[in-house]
Amino acid sequence: MNLDDVNILANRLTNFQTLERYTRRTFGLALTTKCSVACGHCINNSRPNGNTELKLAQIDKLCNEIKTFDEFDTVNMTGGEPFDNFDLLNNATRIIASYGLEPTVVTSAVWAISDEVSRYLLTVLNESGLKVLVISRDEFHEQKVPHSYVVHALRNAIQVGLLSTLTLTTGVGLKGIDDLLKPISEQLGSDIFSQIEILESNLLRAGRAAQLPPEKFGDACVHDPSPLYCHVGGPILLANGEFAACCGAELPISSPLRRGNCDMINASEMARSLKKDPVFRMIRYLGLHRMVELLGPDEFSPSTRSFINSAGQADLCTVCNYLLAEPGRVARLRSLAQNQALNNEMTTIAALLYGDNSALEEKLCV
Image (cartoon, rainbow, N blue to C red; front, side, top):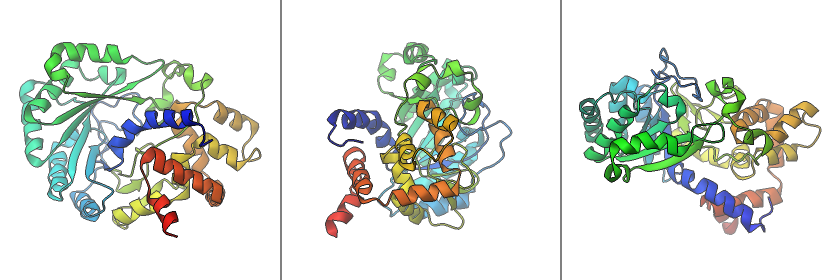
């Protein structure tokens, strides 16, 4: 990346600053693999018969380990569908809040069948310490969760004092933001709807979404390739007790984004080591296409290189998993990351775009 190109830096800052603001100080908890909705684009293949869940002891251990680590002040509970085991969700909320951390939850709102049910469940969670309700919404959720359920959840979340957010999966080939929001805003009314924050995310060709027809991803993912930057929105503790450095897409066994089992590893120490990991830093600050270039023309077959070069943002997880699947390739990337000029570039981008001055401060102290 040319650091003199102000336009490139400005565009990257605009694209990532909102999402990074929500993830920078957040540790993720995938409470369960169970999900009664089982959307067609689910990145982690959650299902109604998913039976893997975090233990309360693991959640307590995590919170105890990160409570004094100044990197995190929020713990975001996801799934699966967290409300499919409400007792686990409520107890996890209590544990998180007891350590002075802010609990938040992401849901489909499949449980919000009426105002009465929504008010009861959200009041219980609010009294346990929940701070934010995030509802995922897109054309896939619409097939299983009526608009009225989302309205019930948002209306009562606002009434009990929870901050509320709608996260929409949109893009070329998918239903647009206006079509997704219109039935919700009409039923909620402008006063309540104006209190809800709206975020957008991209559809990724991972998990069940890998089986979706190409038109759902639009032509842009093929004909308008991006540098494939990823903020690697972790760390997250998965329902099987394993730490991961990203949002929960299935990872190759040898991937350096797998960070070990929570019963064996201290969460704060894991987070510190992750932040300094050369491969993690390259994904965040250089992008996957740049990593491919650094590996050189002989690293991939012509057909593989052609696919990677034409891949767009929807193929982010596919390219990442391919790059990191082979230990030898990961070792070469780690070696390349030791180049001083490359290191300086990543340190600069980390400070300018992500507000991460730690590596820069270390250099100044030397």
